[in-house]
Image (cartoon, rainbow, N blue to C red; front, side, top):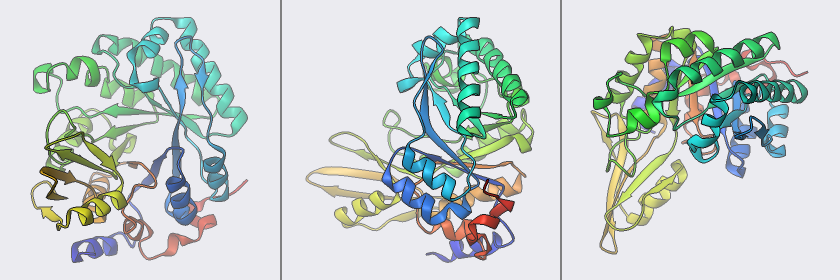
Length: 345
């Protein structure tokens, strides 16, 4: 590991940067990471629930993830999404007070019965025209959850301004504009600020979350939301662009395997503060931007610098193994039962 990473690890020895929330999906890699390093995780947020058009909620926490969370005494905060990020289900719910009430009642009952600490809304691709309706739904849900002793957090797409022309065509109208940061920050317990994806298969090669862009998004959010109600969304994955063929996506280990297959070395971009590599095989040029412990560490430094609530990392099992060195600091967090005062019921 490079010297800069170890230096950052030393800086974290006094304690991790705020609440450490890790997203999870139903896969073996995430369970393995959780069992091995759950002492360095504060909240597990599995993306497993789906809001249906009638206001009902489908899905359940996979047994392996639930068992690992219990073993590590971790609070569960499942994500509820609009399946496939299709707008129809969430718009149907937002257009009906009865369906909103059903969704809130269903989630409250499920959370209480299954022992969840709360829920996170991760509704995306909602038209900006539904901005006020979505804010109202969050307010109603937050009030109901709070009365039941549950938390509500909201994942929000990155914004850098409120002018539609500042974004690619249609992005504000279809993706980003629905989130009223100030109002949502007042209603919910906190917002997970998704400072990704800066670049996608639609934009061409570039960092998933270049540091200058992350700082711009964070500055915009901090002007509207108190820092203690912001969790910095951090990607742990890579994206690949190929001159021929489709895009690529995966975790740190897959990125390293791809680099070895191409027979090239990675380099550090001193402006974007992220690693990348470019290689060619079979007349195809592949460009890969990814995240390692050093790049994640520099994003974690923003959490401490701005006294944010913590971070929200997507997704458990895709991380650079060296990341745990940063989060463990001096190793004191390795005692799972005492990490952050955690107690098992």
